Image (cartoon, rainbow, N blue to C red; front, side, top):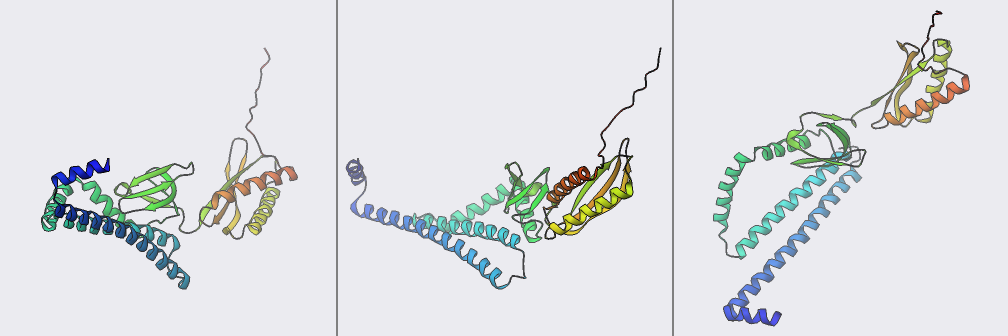
Length: 285
């Protein structure tokens, strides 16, 4: 097959032409290989730059923001190197670069009018990163979905929810973001007890339970937990509320632990957790 292909080429091209095309082919392959190596070197330099910064300046910056910037810088470096490689290849193929760039500018202007959403995505993505609204590794809610931020780019943001589903959101559609990783978060537990119980005794039992949770989870709790007192009177129960402030994303775990210990303590102390019941009065005929 190769002999037949070579014979066909020889019938159409002179030896000098074949040598020129062979040189250009080898040169284009070298350009592509060098570009791939340059991308690897750029990624390595970006990684080492951020590692050096956090090794010697542990008190400055935010690690999650650094992860976001690393991903963005790697993307920019790849696009820039691919663009340079494409221009170099076209130049080797004899394509007039000035004409191509001029045509690309006119085409870009025309496409810009029809790609307003793309421009909006890029501009919004820039401000998201510049203002540090959220970073890779943080839990956020936006556009009706919530999840851990896996990537923040200039055009899209990727969120992974608790079910493992990946949500890809155009940056231009992000109007409001709720960030669960900035500052302490609230753990809120409502406890229901029977009207027959001694409320002072119940409140003291709950205070003791909160104290044990605070001692065992001091690294996750920034404030409380504390018993706020009676917050509602239901049809068959008295509602007592407990509140605590926790480190980011630990509020749900603290709530579960509080409920578990309260249930165990109530069983041990004989405190009744009420259930809905109805009284039926029957009249004799």
